[in-house]
Image (cartoon, rainbow, N blue to C red; front, side):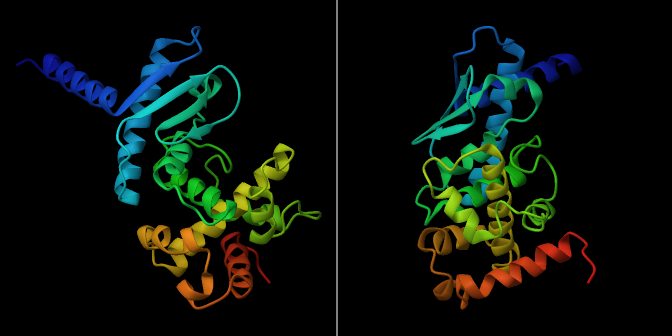
Length: 234
C-alpha cells in the first residue's frame, strides 16, 4: 500500500464516519461544497468531544445550513447555522450541539452559560460571544463598564430567560456573563465535574442544596474572581 493511497483511505474513512454522525441539509445552494463538507467534518469532531464531556449521545445530528439568521438548535437533533459562518470561521456549532445534548436546564443563565462553556471546550473556531477571548475577562469588561448593560449573573438571567431579550449588544453582554458564571461554577466550585453540574445545579437551580451557599452569597465571590482574572489591581 503506497503512502498516498493510505492517506486517501484514511481521509475517506474519516469522511464516511462524519457523514454517518452528521448529515447536512443545505438551504444555501450557492455555497461552495468544500465549505459544506468542511463544516460537516468539524461538527462531527465537535460532537464527539461534547458527547464525551457530557456523557450523552442523541444519535445522528442534522446540520441545517440556512441562508440567513443566527445559530439555533431544534431538538431532538438539528442545529441551524447561517451560511456566512461557514465562510468566516465563526461557526457556533459546538454551542448549539451543547444545547441538544443538555436539555432540561433550570433557567436561561444555566442554559446559555453552559452552551458558551461547550463552545469554549470543543469549538474549533472562535465564536459568539467571546470570539476566543478568555470568557472571564470578557465578562469583567461588561460588568465594569461605566454604564453596564449587565451588572452580573442576575441581570444576565433576566435577559436570557426572556423570549425576546432585545438588541444584540445587550444579549452579547448577557451571554458573556452567563458563560463566565457557569465556567466559574464548574471549574472553581465543582472542581471541573461537568456531569455533576448538569445532573444537579443545571437542572435544579438550587445553589444552597448543591453548593451550600445561596445565589446571592455566591455572586460577590464570582465577581472577585473575574476581577482578579482580568488582572485588576486594588
